[in-house]
Image 1 (cartoon, rainbow, N blue to C red):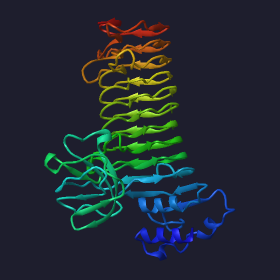
Image 2 (cartoon, one colour):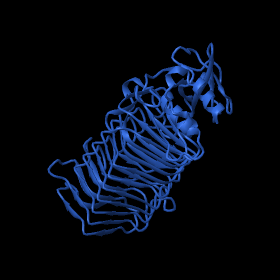
Image 3 (cartoon, rainbow, N blue to C red):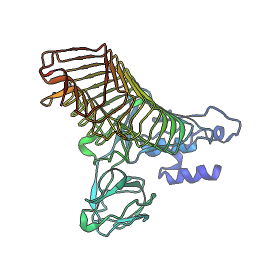
Image 4 (spheres, rainbow, N blue to C red):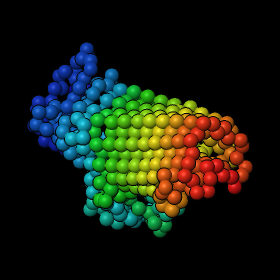
Amino acid sequence: MRILLFILFLASGTVQAQYDDFKIDALLSPKYQGVTITVGGEGADIPGFTNKAIQLAVNALPLEGGVVKLNDGIFLLKDAVHLRSNVNLVGSGASTVLKRGKGFASRLVDDADIAELKLVVEDPSGFEPGMSVQIWDEPQSSCWNVSSGTITDIKENLLYIDSYLVRDYRADKGGWVSNAGSGISIKDAENVVVSNFVIDGNRANHERVDGCNGGGVAIFKSKQITIDHIHVKDFNGEGITWQITENVTIQNCEIEGCANMGMHPGTGSPKSRILNNNSHHNDVDGMFICWRVHHSVVRGNQFHHNGRHGICTGHKDSDVVFEENHIFENGSDGVNLRGENSRNSPHRNTFSNNIIENNGQSGEGYGFSVYSTPQELIIKDNTIRDTDRGTQKAGIFLQGDVPEVTLKGNRMSGHELGDVIEQ
């Protein structure tokens, strides 16, 4: 253990004297429980204000886990903070800010092939070891076709990375490398808590982050994860994304000004709990529920002033309860059930006691729009209204082949085309 920590210190690239006060003996004691390591400032165990300083603390915790406590200050991120099982990352509130650094990108000179760990770039000047990267070309530029990793070394214009490429990227078909990356990354982990700080995506000066590979907070192949009182703002991508997960809780968070969705649960993520969040002024949806998010609850949230829908749900997103949410003044629909065939529609979902009002701010929209063919869709006891704005054209729009929907106890008013319309 001592050797590993010593190697870790050397790899950090910081003068060893900076860590003279680091309480390493306590961490090495096998009987020591409840370890807390503080980061940021002269009085901290690790005084730096970078992702490397935070990562050093995470890696130094014993296998049983512990707490990394971030003090007041702005922490510059050139790579995500990568969390592992049984680690709690806790800030000091709005005064703790994790901010992504300046973006940079270069064309590929040579093709970068699947399972390679190197990239030949036209301009290496903006890259450095320890920096995150994303790799794509024109035919493969989104979601799981994009590769991501961290630079381990640079030799002239050759970048070495730590993760195998997932596709073949052609230099002659618009192959690019950028230093885009997440704020917090949780992968192949369980029992993690992230709480009480701000993630500033530095959107105007940072490259775009693909939503299936990253976000302000990005969770992959993990379970028993809680994200609490995190404020994600101005991220050039998605605010909080979780894919291939189980038992993820997102609560008391604010997500604003992101270039894609505010929240994106998807790719088979049952038992999600989305509670008391405020997702607003994001370029696309307040929340995009994507592909097999089931047996979940969405309660007490605000989704407003987003560029498209407040909530969009679709492919096998079934057995979800949506209750006590306020969904208002989004660009198109308040709630959109996007087009899916009868086998893949979002079945057995219940919307109750929500307020859905004044959506369609980009021209027109509906309170609810149902373009799929869901079984056992229940919409009950909601307030669905247009308060003289004239943009929310109907309370509920049902496409012609939608099965019978249970409508009960809803209070609807002010819609130009009627409260419930079918086409």
